[in-house]
Length: 130
Ligand SMILES: [Zn+2]
Image (cartoon, rainbow, N blue to C red):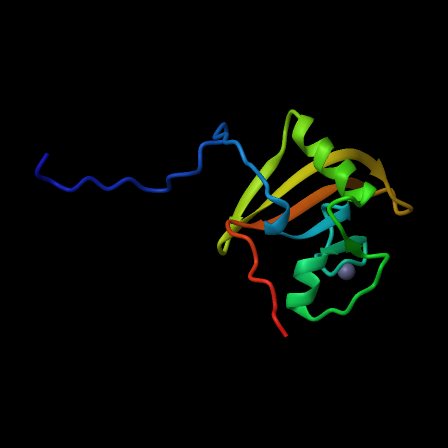
């Protein structure tokens, strides 16, 4: 083929599927709450992993700090791994995975999607040495 062919308005194939393998050291944070809401965290919890909290200097709060044995994160990762439909999105050097667990109504009769997101990088974090 010698001529250039232009393809316009191409979209990501909706049935594009791929597998992920998530290493604990690569996880930044986990979101647990309403999915179709603003991203500030007012409708859910952002839970930082211990190593990411150190990098972000958000301090150490035992109730939001996830260790690999934390039952909340273990449950979320297990649900993700057996789910039939997990959404994914690429971001800088990493990924966001999203699992919708239920749909409900809030007090204003709006449809509310609840679920989880896992934010992780392709490579483990460098541990801070201080
Ligand atoms: Zn908000």
